[in-house]
Image (cartoon, rainbow, N blue to C red; front, side, top):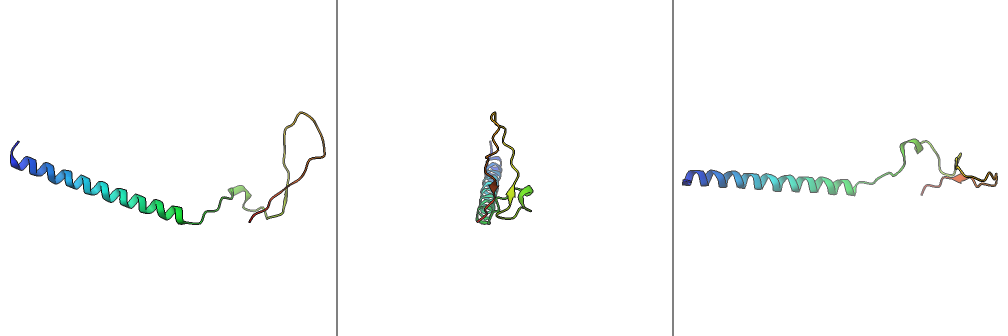
Length: 76
């Protein structure tokens, strides 16, 4: 290998190394932005349900007793 080939190899190697660092830095910055955003952990089908509202729940059990408690949604 002559000096020109070695020089081109080093130029491209440094370019790939710089692009890798830039990509990693950008992705970590975007990931940290996502972690800092407030999140709502409400299921889309539960958005219309108000806090304290009773829901109908079906539990499949072998014994049939009517003394089941109602489920009440409480959001803080």
